[in-house]
Length: 239
Ligand code: FPP
Image 1 (cartoon, protein in one colour):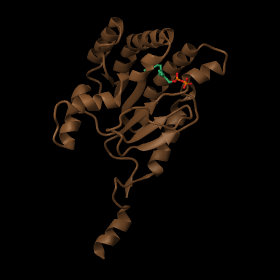
Image 2 (cartoon, rainbow, N blue to C red; image 1 turned 120 degrees about the horizontal axis):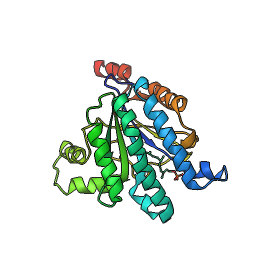
Image 3 (cartoon, rainbow, N blue to C red; image 1 turned 90 degrees about the vertical axis):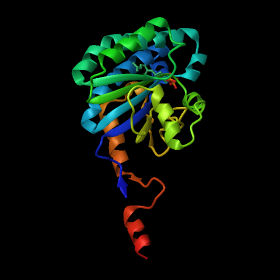
Image 4 (cartoon, protein in one colour; image 1 turned 30 degrees about the vertical axis):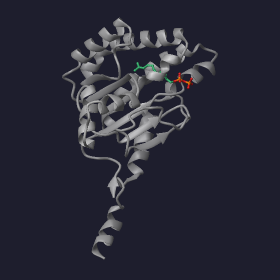
């Protein structure tokens, strides 16, 4: 049996869902939910290293999110830009390296500049690799990688990695908040053997304890990667 936790640190990917409903339940505009969601991002980044997380990929804006009303899209873009501008210094202090994955060419210029600055300024961070997926579609990334004509899994993985910052291991754990249970075009290749964890907690209410609970549940899972649990496998080989 391969236990959930590995020595090299975990790659956790989070679909941060439920901001809009969180806000609506409080009689607030949906954008207030995204703002509260940014605070949850801060909490999770602070908590991650002590929980054994080395890579954290957050789904901040999917390529399908362009379909949302323009004011909500603009508010999200401004929020992302402001977050990158205001949080970079504390990321440097905490040893957090920021890499953005996804398309950049459709983002507002100001957001593109904020991304480039944040990546540059935090490049030396080694405690936690924070990957923000912005204008991200896993299927689009797979099409881009396939256009290079890969002949093997490794070659395809190589091209996928080449679109992002620093190479990262496959995803160990996918967390989705907000009660829905789907992947929504997020890291489909990289999560091939990830454990999935769904929680009804809305993203703005997510924090250290909720993250710790998800990691604890992950540690209880048996990861077999298509093989057999270790004890069973040894017995089978011996017979
Ligand atoms: C999904 O909730 C969430 C998003 C589309 C945006 C995620 C963005 C943030 C958490 C803001 C800050 C991010 C960073 C990296 C600073 P939803 O709006 O679909 O919620 P609903 O399903 O309740 O409508």
